[in-house]
Amino acid sequence: MDLGASELCLSFGGDFKYVSFVLLYCDLKSKALVNLRIGRVYLIHHDGTFPDSVSHTLTTLFLDSVQFTYGKPGFEAILSAFPNLQNLRLHESKEWYYWDGSVSSPTLKRFVYRRDDDTSGPKPCVKFDTPGLAYLEYSDVVAAKYENLRLDSLVEARLDLLLTAGQIMRKNAPDNVGFVPGDVSTFFKGIRHVKILCLSPDALDTLYYRGGEIPVFNNLISLSLGSDRPHGSPYIFKKLLPSLLLKAPNLQTLIIKVWCKERVMY
Image (tube, rainbow, N blue to C red; front, side):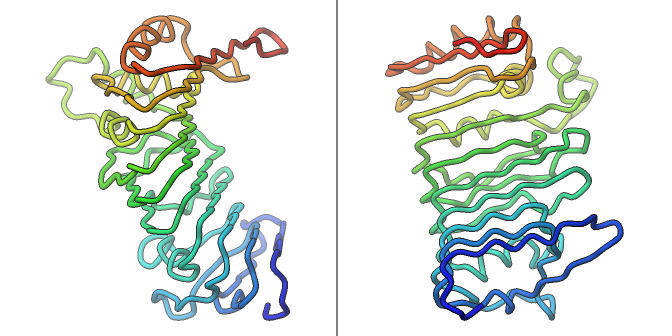
């Protein structure tokens, strides 16, 4: 890896059920690497501890179906190995989930997380200890809870949050049903400083069923609702739109995407 390359793409292909490709953190040691993409591989540290820094120059990392140990050191090893990381993108494919829901980094400016499969259960807890994060793209099943949200620098958020059937049913359930995890009110309060907010139809459903009172978005100047997919409820859209507009006193741009057969209308 110490060949002076500034950009590298490593994709091993195949199916984890039959073939396992293992890559050690030390194999990525570099003094010049800036942009790295890794696909379909086990990324591990040889002794189960946090790896030393392997690249101080790496600023952009894309992990496409990359597995690392769940739990300690797990995902945190990524941030330990690349201490100056600014852009991080995680893509998890069906039946392979590796992010434990926690991100803690003083240098991270952009974070994109996408999980293709919406049939699995929620993560126990999601944390964003990212005081410098400016851009967040987050597509996942709603977590059981959200805490330690340091997102005061967030400028743009694109959200596609999905609810389980149990979380949806809690909206009008009697009190004796008991606690059902998945309240997103804390999360939306954590992103209330954004200037640009994009909500998918599923995210609107989530806000309606499990969002509680919508916080005031004083900095919000651009709001985008809808998507190019036939998801979401028109009823919920009509119910939430007036409330969202009232909670965004400085809004300048409103974009509404309406799916119509084979095209999207704005």
